Image (tube, rainbow, N blue to C red; front, side, top):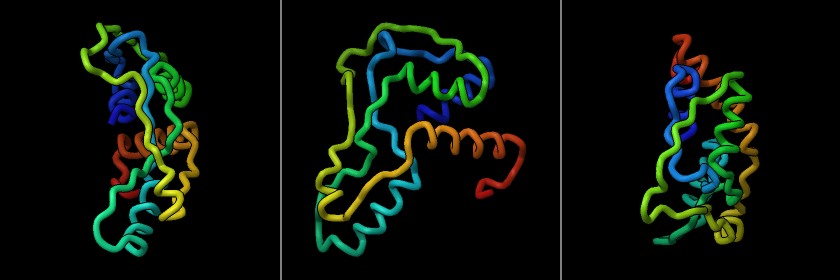
Length: 132
């Protein structure tokens, strides 16, 4: 959701609110990497099991914004705000169980995922079908 919102704000020249100094990091996963994990779980899990699917490679917020800026060839307007109480500094998926049980392995780098997303976003904004 952040990638979509940040892209929209950069293209519309609206400020992006960054809580704290922008060095907190999150694990962003490209949808094409999640789908095989879900499908594999349908065949390999019998009953109830908790399995994390993700990329397991956190990226800091300012680097994420920078990648989007490069892809859309525009600078973000960043509005810094106080860090939110209770916000976790770094989060990422522990995918060891998914690798073992599902043979899950994300393959899309954050750079490639951002590039693919921006291409899709621009097509959508130009009026192309959602699924083009």
